[in-house]
Length: 102
Image: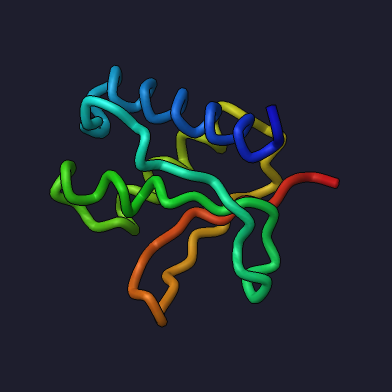
């Protein structure tokens, strides 16, 4: 398992916990969520499309979903120094960008 798969699993676990708490709605499967290398201009370690993926089913903005996810991750995993959310203006999409402690 590589680091992207490891953190994809952590993100999906966080989403399942948020769903159990009634904070977000999840589709039947989470196969459309990914983690990848972010564009270099963001100076981050990993990015995820989770907020974009979940915005439609939740009838909420991707930024609102991103805030919900980042709050839950910050509460549950202190290894993230901070979670930076950015709106990728060129594509008009919101991704979560993660930076880890060194």
